[in-house]
Image 1 (tube, rainbow, N blue to C red):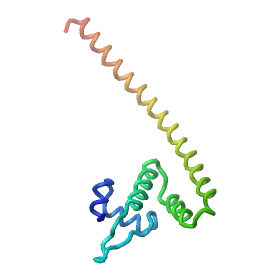
Image 2: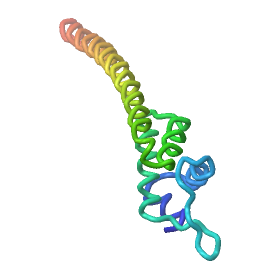
Image 3: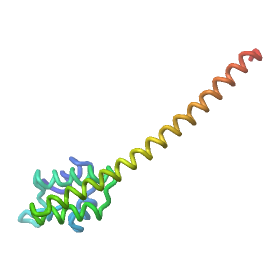
Image 4: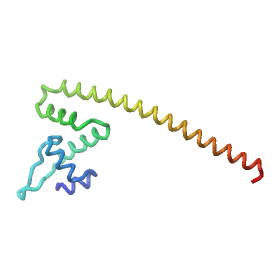
Length: 128
């Protein structure tokens, strides 16, 4: 698959794909005879994984560390697991913070809605 096809299929810019490859976030992509990137399904799976982890808030640095550990083989399985456990703890904390924010927003919206209802009632009472 070409970089354009992968970009469109996975909704990620071509520049980002090149950047991820350059910094080692995704393994080096094979090239065709013309020298153009030729993505495989495995490459696409790496990109999907990275997108998912980035959207969950994992930093580029953490993901580079993970990829480096992965490429070292099975002797790093425990280290990779610990890395994910730590990232999960951080994600849970962010979710809790976001839940608190959501509750505050819901409260504020309810106050504004109640204000509108009270103003409408006052208008009805005054005959307007």
